[in-house]
Length: 234
Ligand code: UDP
Image (cartoon, rainbow, N blue to C red; front, side, top):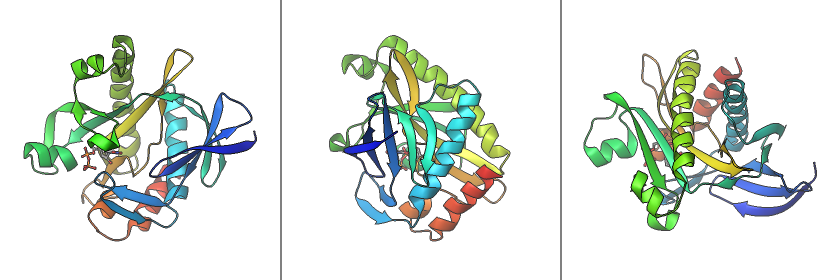
């Protein structure tokens, strides 16, 4: 597979075309942003950690029957993925209160929720990724009823699978964000799954091993990502 032109550059990744129109290369950068781009920085080797962690998780989920865009790992920072049309939704799952849920609804961080929360945000940086519901999704034509049904079904399954996966690594999956894409009539899990997109707390101590270390200047960011990678590869 030959790497061709840059077709998109986001906050943490670059997408390159290939000589096959069905596939693109996803390149992971070290750039880090938080609070919708208000905080910017760089974390040494974050792109390498996230590429390797995402690879492992996509492989695990595919083995459990979740369709994903992941094809294969190409290098330290690159993976080959199917060229999907990204659905303009951020699908967030919460098992414990943290982040914007704690801020918006006045619930203390770490509080156990009596049900799993599923949230959708409209993927629009210019609008600050507003929280939306099923009827907004319908009216804004972001996904069909069938697509949304599939997204929900896959997302709850991914939560079950990943919660167990991380628990075995002594990590608690507090919350996470998923993105999906369309590919020849199917819905595929896309983007990345990494400590940039998941809150992961050490079981027992509650130590944060994720992007909150960058968001809140907690230090040892590289060590935290390295630790997650070591466990995922163990
Ligand atoms: N998240 C993400 N990208 C976003 C927004 C959120 O990956 O643009 C992830 C975030 O890392 C966390 C979960 O989704 O694991 C819930 O994030 P929250 O809404 O609490 O946002 P934040 O605290 O970042 O404002």
